[in-house]
Length: 497
Image (tube, rainbow, N blue to C red; front, side, top):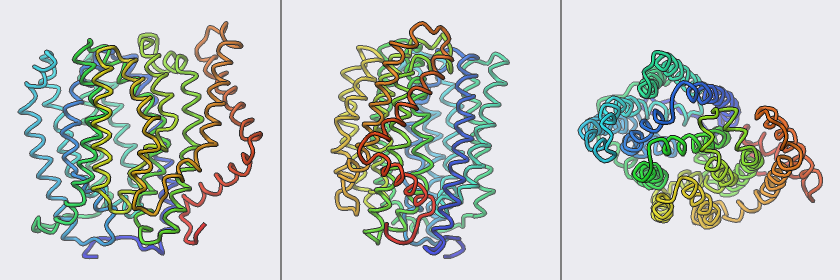
């Protein structure tokens, strides 16, 4: 392999077990740190602080889309790697990252002028250093994920979160306001970059960039889709900031962040391992589809009922975790949470296309998403943040099946696998949501403490969900299969299911 270590299909089972375990452990650590960060910083900083950094983040994150160019996925998906090819991809990433950092600094005054907020100039300039840090570590992270060395990635991510949180808290206590969030991002990025170089044990060589042509062609499709996804996912923040005060951006971005927190911590551990495993199975149709069905089933059960509970307890979640100053975001949080019930499964479309090498297909899906979703946001942003959240939610449900049909086209998976594996979990989520709403109106309306209401709702929703699975035809069998499918995903069994 030209100096690059890789795993064989014979090692896939053992590596998948270890990789999945460490990914879940790392994700648990990240979740705990994110929870602490949300709770602590929401009380030390103001909505305006989050709003300012959120506005700068729209531009920073936009440029960040181009630093990777999909080359990490090219490294993970490719059947075979060489030192020359991977080194070429590293140098392409580095050149692009340096260029984007310079562009970001040059455009900072324009960003400040667009929002008529002078403070954004220096926020954008300082934050741009994070692009450079990420750019020089992308290929190292991709090699670790390809080899399913999730333990190292988990250590790296947790250390980055700790450094970021510690920096934010110290700066906030010193009265640095929005700079606390800026410096926190840089501290986390620097620690992650240093650790990823240490753990990967790979050093790039000086080679011709022509060795990276094949990976670049594949990666551009991924990068194009990511660009379209960014446009569709950040137009809301940009337009809300244009039509409404910065505090509204803070309310919306915090509600969106709270919704994404459980979604990412369910989806990311599974999909990060699954992408590597599916890429190894791209030449085996039966095993590819069986593994994909298991992923859909596990994602649906792990995500739908919990998000239904969050929807029912949206007011309590905001009050307990963020504090009273964030209560204006309750309605937005509730609407986004309802939309997130199906998001981890219906929007896990990249797995089939990337693992099958269909990056162009992936780009077309992202393009259509961007056009339609931007139209929805443009119509709703002048109305208010609740209208934007409602537009997102309606769009997500309306496009779930069409997206899945496109994602599975000319791959080994079938679009109806999504429906077959998720209809029972979805009905269970609806039962959970109904029980939560009924409990708030009939049993808990006189309970003053948000924490007591939240804990009580959790117990009621858990009982309702458990009862649903006991009573629905095939429910017990589905849960037994869920247990077995989870084990299979973690172990990546070699025989067809």
